[in-house]
Each structure stands twice: as structure tokens, then as C-alpha cells.
Length: 96
Length: 499
Image (cartoon, rainbow over all chains, first blue to last red; front, side, top):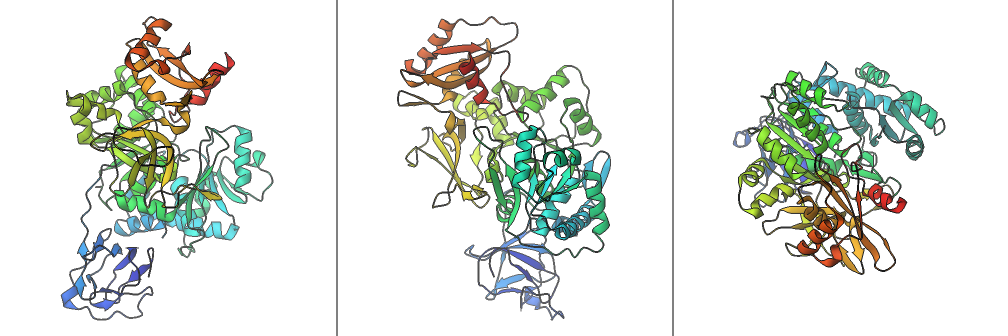
């Protein structure tokens, strides 16, 4: 994966676009995400079932991976067992 | 990456919400998305290399922008105000293109080149007709979302390229997705060929803020539309704001009670105009945005609170910030450098350099970025101790007199302090003795007497120094501006050469 890659959840409707980061295994709802749409959805791990929100950005603890949720779903995102955190963006006044 | 993601997310999040209003017609996000998919399918069938818009703003602009993005070719909005010969040259540079808009003129100017011509109405109808069978597949192409020809104030227009990654970097870094409510409406009156015309579409689609298009700016139409559509946000260039205020002063009535925010940019804001606007609209949030085509729009901004605190302050340093363009965006790095490329400390004037994802700095055939990715804007400026950026004209406008660099801005500022002077411009003119000498052109305030030459020279000598004293002085009826309110210094220079 590289910036621009879209990853789909294997357990729910979640889809994310990679903004930053490369070659890491991103999980959603406890299952590995992939570029392909799963033929059949697998069961969600209840430990990662807080859901994703469209338009929100998710980051790992050191900020090396950043994902944009482009389709929401029931699963939540994690890398190596650690949940990704919602990135708080300071709102800017509209300038266009 | 593809900017079509912006439209897709908006259409997924709230398909039936109205995203665009133009000429009384209302378009939902779903309707725009369907038309964009149809346009992409038609583009693929034609096999053109660019899609060009030779037209005023309408629903065709976002349909062409997103349709081109999905089809993987650049969207090229053209300046319909260009003279025939200049426009013909640009049409040649984008062949074979799918040209939407003024079919008669485009056919006459570019009969060769394999172009496909289509009126606005036919383009939109064909896009809607193809929507049902369109795949919606997104193609990468060269990764270029938009190609914008610069205004070419110094030489032939350059084809500035904005990649999907630049525009998405800008939008994702500055706009919160779906941050607008259904009551929010953005009045867009800048022409589609200007970078602000593109960024306005992208920002508002991503925020899910309804766009209200005003295809040709007229202050009375602006006021009428702002009132009728309960507009909450607007972007204007300073000359537009001046004309709107003029009409309000002349008694034109409009209900602007919904108007929460006015952003402005695209040219220098006269201090007395912004002061007047802040008094006239005491509840409105003003934002000054500074950006370039090559930087995907805004790179620095002066926000609403900063406007109010500067406006209400008695501290000269804080008040002066109304004349700044604010601070760089958190996602952009900005430096002032001297001619050798050395970074300059606060207070020293040099050239503005920027770096960031949104900064393209790329033209067809070459990139202007240095090895570390910095873009030289060719704008001169300096930062104050708090990081506020002050612009001092184009780096090319610097007057070099006997090896000494003189910023036109410092001379103009001193001249503007004279109560009889409405506008002042300093330019370099050829001099056998100094290489270049200072010449000034001024416009006298109505009802005031022209200050004599000695008064003007003494004013500059006392406030600056003798090297800044103008050799030539001209009084003009008005300064030459282009339609976006950009001062045409070359025409001021030409005035001195012709006389």
C-alpha cells in the first residue's frame, strides 16, 4: 500500500484511503483490510467494533500512518493490535 | 489519488442535499455525481487529451472538473476574456480537446487540431444521458487534475499543472468533511478559469456547503442573490467588495442577515476598504486568503479574530496586521529568502518560498521546485516577529537602482499616507545613470488638489531616503487593473515609456 491506495474492510462497509504510511497491515473489525472487495464478509471482532466515521482521519500513535475514512462501517481500525485514534483537526476559517 | 473522491463522499453522505444552484436550477450531490460519471464515459469515448471549459460558471464546471478527474485527463478552464489570437494559441496547446462552451468561437479559432466542440447545454445533456450506463470507474492518467494557464503578465502564459495529490492535499488539510449544515450557502462569483474558482468548488463540495453560482459578477446581482439564497459565505476580490459597498452606500437594499463570513484575496486590499467593510458588517467574519495558482489556492490566511483585533487595536504593530496576509497554513512551510537563496530573519524583505503537499510549482514540461521541494513564488515579502506575512509586490517588480534593491511597496505606502492620494504605484524606468530609476504614478482623490512634485519628493526623502525619490511623476485618471483586480504594473511602466 501507498498514499492514495484504498483499503476495504473484510467485516463491514468501511473503506479508507491511505494518506500517509506504506506497507503496513491495517485491520478493520479485527480482520485484515485489502484493496479487493471481500466476496463474503467475515465476523467482526467485538474488541474492534466502535465504528468508523466518513470524512474522519485516523492515525497511529507516532503519526506515521494516517487514513481517511471514505466509507463508514461498524468495525474500528487497528494496526498490530493497537487501535488507531481519531485525528483532531483544528478548524480553519473557509478561505475559498 | 483522485479528486473525484470529494464528490463521491458528498454523494454518499447526503445524496439528496442540494450542492449547487445556478440560474435557478438546483442540483443535488447525486445529480452532479451522475452527470460527472456520464461525462467521464463520454470523454473516454471521444479519446481527447484535455477537457476545456470556454464559458462562464455553470453546472458544467463541476461536471467537467470531476468528469475529467474520473476519466484521467486534465480539466482546462480557459479565460474567455482573452483576445482571439491569445486564445487560439492556447487551444492549439491542448489539442485534441473536448471543448465545452462557446462552440462558435472555438471552432473559428481552432478549426484544426482534432477538437470536439460541445455547447454547455449539449455537454450537460450528453453527460446525463450517459449516466445510467457509465461504469463510474476512475482512471489515473498522468495524475493531473487541472491545467490552468497563468495570466501571462510578463511572458507567454504558462500551463500550471495541479495534480490530484496537490488539490486533495489542500482540501483534506483545510476543510472538515461535511462541516456545513443544509442552511449553509457559498456565493461563488469568481470566474471558473481562476484557481479560486476551482478551490471554491472543491472546498464547498467537501464541506457539503451549497454553492450558489453567480456567473458574471455585478454588485446588484450579488446583493440580490445573497439575499434571495440566504447566503452564509462568500469569496470576493477586493474590487468586487468595493463595488458591493458602493452600491449599499448608494441605497441598494439587500437582506444580508445570513451572511456570516466573507473571504477575500486575489489582490491587494486597500486598508480603508477593509476598515470600512469591518464597520459596515460588524457581525461578519472576514478572512484574507493569500495563494497562487501554483499552490492550489490558499497558503496563508488572516482569520476573523485577527481582523477584529487589528481593527480595534491602538497598537500600530497589531493594527498593521490588517495589511498582512496572515500566517501560513499549518500544512504549509514558508520562508523568506534573499537572492542567493539564504533564509532571512523576521523583518527582512526577500522572496516568499513555500513547500507542502498542495504546492505544485509544476508547469507543462518543467518544475519550478528546487531540489528540496521549495517553490519560489516570485512574490516579495517579509514576516513580522509574530510570523505574519506582509507582501511587497512581485519580486520582478523590485526596482534595481545603481545596484540597490528598492521595493515599490515601501514607496507606495509613504505616498498613500498623503491625504490627496487615492492610489500610488512605483515602478522602475530605464535610466542611463542608474540602470533603473524610480517613477511614480498616482491617482488623486476626488475633490483634492494635486500635490506638487516637490511636496511628493520631500515626503519620500524625509520618510525613506534619497535613492527612493522619484525621477518621474505621473498623474493618472485611474490605475490599470485586470478583471480580477490585479494591478497591471507593466502598463504603468509602459505609460512612462510612451510619454
